[in-house]
Image (tube, each protein chain N blue to C red):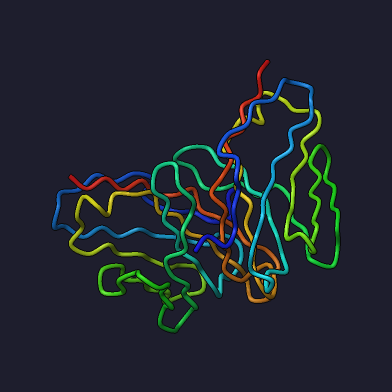
Length: 115
Length: 113
């Protein structure tokens, strides 16, 4: 079964609203989680790395004030797209790894459509 | 700057034949490489990986070859099956499997029955 659960799988929202995406590790402690974004027919691009209990590290070009990441517990990380605009429409995927970085598991992704 | 490249955006292979997907990288710090299979609107599914200390890893129908001097890796699927039709991404990381991955651009594999 899935070891990383991501919700919601699909969300449609109006421009200007905020959307929260959750990523949960189900049977291991995820000390590090990664958030990726994929535009249609393009590669998965890393947005940020979050470590439990500390601030996320954002990749170059990713606005940290727009994409708020919280990793408050060892099993949950959230990505909030604030004041979403149509250009934020994309497929967002989280992945999680345990303390010893042995395994890396991906969530099932969230398709965000901003009208 | 695309550090991991898959130069073939698409590939069609007859069922039962061998599928060979290629991947090139530029960052010499990468020491761990992975292949993922992905369907639209789903997360990637891990297939097989290889560390830089090896040049081959095999798992069932999947074999990954690594040529460090050429900074090239390939995924062989044999025999190819219709269920293998998907987009395949290679990915690379530095200093261990859990570190952030850099993905290639993907190759859409179509298996022809």
